[in-house]
Image (tube, rainbow, N blue to C red):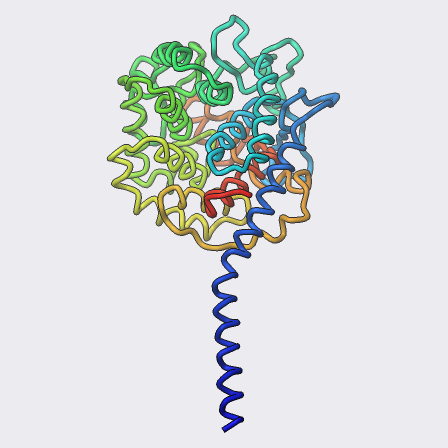
Length: 398
């Protein structure tokens, strides 16, 4: 009888202990995520330049390579990653603690000093990927050196809308820029060459402001423009509607899976396209995109299985969470003691695609062989993508 009583008590203790473990373990995991998120945010702030002989004050160091997984990187000053980092931190702000908000605010304020070097030289409120002052020297070289001059690239719509979002432009300032953008739209006269046939006839926004520059459509750029329009409450124009149609037809026709480089020549990867679409759908409900949500989650799950880096997995998982799905779990423990610099060449979010400016035949040849592809890296932005995933997963950051 005593033996049975002891066995009963022991079983109850084990059950209670196991029950406590089940009850506590999710909170332990969330606490670990919060500690890692805080560490990532501090690391991002520390990456922002205070003083350097090459990098501008307030900028996040970026690098360029002609290879996907490079051993040698070239330093690069660009406002692009500052814009992405500030935009993402703004988006996550509601989930930040008081202390985290202070760190995010300091990053935002230090970034504002950067943009004067990238603004249009004639005073227009448009921005360039690279510096527009005389100190700039075009970083690409090799076979293309004879064709490239200082400040050879025009301002672009992508950097412009992202910069204005980072700078907290007013709705009236955004409206002026939006009006200017209507002059840089694909048309039959401009003759867009694309392997994707419907691109040629869609009067959506070109990526470039330059009148003499070729028209290039990029679905990720179009997503960023539409996010900008929604945040600033701008009225839809014909170019905006056409941009929505380009995105919907791209996804509906699975071109993001089969011809990612054709529909997004500057972002290139299916996973990055899905991330931009998820970001757009987070701020704007578009019925034709909502109808594709199930397909998009399934596509993202497939891409997650193909991803080889923690950064890309986090980015894809964030997209799935924004769509209301449940992404696969993956191990982040290896990041706890790794610096930004040690991961500087892990994941290229953006590429410089020189063939995108070429005529159709030469473009096809060079693109297939990835001739003139320049891969861009930013360690701090990689950490932002990880931070975004952790915050969206837990909906809080201590």
